[in-house]
Length: 121
Length: 108
Image (cartoon, rainbow over all chains, first blue to last red; front, side, top):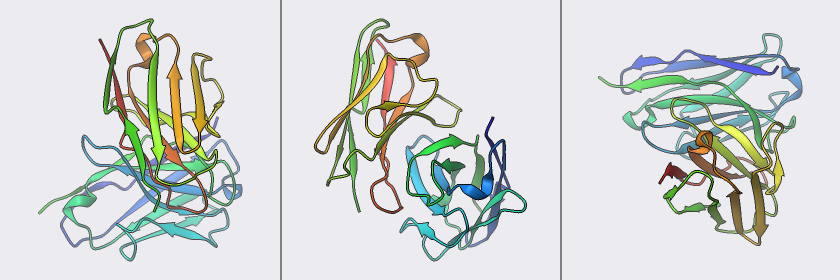
């Protein structure tokens, strides 16, 4: 069974940095694109970023472009999200999700349970 | 950027009745539309992709349809476990892909 487990969330001050990780199991991680989606408390889902299976293509929402960096290590079956210049409105649960394909241009068929990022002084 | 608009924001339906949820795209997304279900404290779960194809393990009471830029999710006979928030999302072209704001399906 395909599974995704996020970690790395926590409390960070405004302007600070944090790195999220997402470890995959139960499928061939290196064959699939991956996504990050976040959800602020009491709010809807917001698309954050995506990366192709080989890491050669990356995509970002305008709200995080230039501040966040998505990457992956296929040998470790791990997806990352480096978050910088964090702001109060980055406070959210961050989910990683698997794409149907290697290009990260389809729907998300497997989701992790999420990790919470809190931005506060 | 494609904007996805869902309606209504909240839908109150009695168990056993039919629920109809709507999603409209601001421009054509073809059939590149997915529906997700999210229960409190849980991650979203894929229900429908390709506008009308049920994901693995999704009961037949869930169905999706499309007409141009208008998409509909129908739950034919609501069960207690169906009360949740439902999101549509397009995956047309290249990311980023936007979500609708969600429809909360609550017990009447």
